[in-house]
Image (cartoon, rainbow, N blue to C red; front, side, top):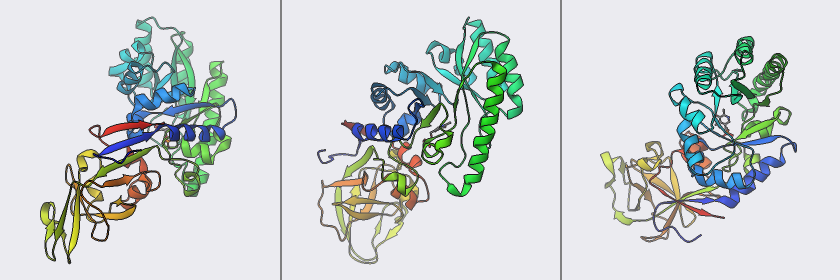
Length: 368
Ligand SMILES: *Cc1c(COP(=O)(O)O)cnc(C)c1O
């Protein structure tokens, strides 16, 4: 890839394909693969990522909100799309665009059922979510009778799947809890299937679930972060390739003397002679203020350079005192070797937050 000449997010579709194949290699042949492409495919580009995965014959997509599903339909996605967190105000759109809602409580069930009836739908695919301990979205185990009674009294809706979500699949200290979630999901699924009289798909695993709990892959798995190159462990990271590289350039270099300050509120005060470079990326681009004042860092000519002072809206300043470089040189914020996970953990967050925050104003550039 040519050197960056402005701030740019490079996205490697070849790496995406590698990650997809690696994750698939962990599955049984008939286990379906759902690609989670919410939040612009974790900050990259949902349309391009989903189209590429559709060509690779992924089985399913998921997004968080209805508007994200609509955007995928507009981009030419024809595979089924599960909307994980739809609101009733969007249900008409859900049906018009053939999106498949997560039905997570009785309010949503009743409102979706009423609308689907009104629009003369038959066997409209829905996904019933159960809460097994995350306590975020989902019915409880003792809601099964009620849900089934609602579904079987007419043929308006069809339970295409029943699913749940793990609270700590990446954390082996929580292994016992994860196993209890899996076992209660199994018992809910058994009861549900018996009562409804047909077999919905069962799924509970996210990326770390796929990697750590092969016995819980069931009929489908839902992978997000792994597709984008992070396995939530040192061991698994080795098998995956981060697809996104965030690069920029040095706009200007200042030489400052002892006692001079850098940036807003004079937050950095120099203890001696320093070379400071200004980079055109700031908190409005997703590099939050928590990366300022020596916590965050970038790479100039493969050498780590710390962010000095406060992160500005459109700029950061970095200490390049000991780095051979000049104005116009490339700066790497993260890439395959200097990972978003390393940078994120330097300011007590996780790769998910850093990569999904990269703002829309940064140009995306794709390679194979
Ligand atoms: C975001 C999400 C996923 C994907 O999780 P990863 O850890 O990124 O693989 C799966 N299922 C649900 C319900 C989600 O919200």
